[in-house]
Length: 267
Image (cartoon, rainbow, N blue to C red):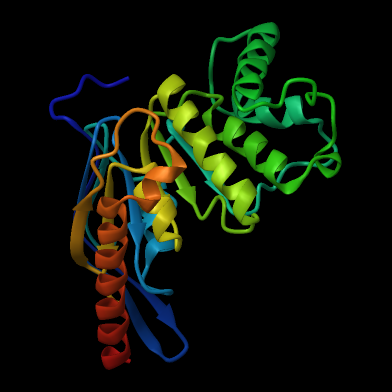
């Protein structure tokens, strides 16, 4: 791990990015600037198609920005890094491997000095943390959607990444399961610290899980506003119905409406 010269785990510095299409160049991000503190957790919200998923690819090193820089823990990103974990809406677990073997997979790819026994112990610890004790030998198809997503989170964290990227991880789940996994995320964050980015369309999710919510403008996206959630400890779901949370959600909805209007005017 690099010694830190600042307190930021992720720095997006003056990043712009475009895609080439059959009809010409499509600008997606424009002079985007984001700083996420070390071990901080930030949600990114905005209109559909504003570049949120492009942002995750830039942070992971899967894309290079046209202009600007991406830094993770004081290191400029020019290619994919092994210290990044990722989880998506679709868990993409391998059916020919049981749950334990699926969780261990990153430890078979990312260089490490763990023995097979230590790898299994690490995976079992995470599975226990998310309530999947006793399901280690099950195939993915034998688990519910929520249980598969729990396993996916374990897989994303098993190699102890310094940065965790979550791209709509709970978007395909029913409301009850989704809220249950919100509580699991708080537990994981307490036991397995990481610098995190959450891409989501669920504004309640954004203010319940993270320390800060960044609203992106309409495409090409830049910073529209940043809202501190001031969450601490292990908040209860009931806190979402408190006046402070209600006002925060109202503000976020208003900001996204502005972004949607601006994006429509640019089209």
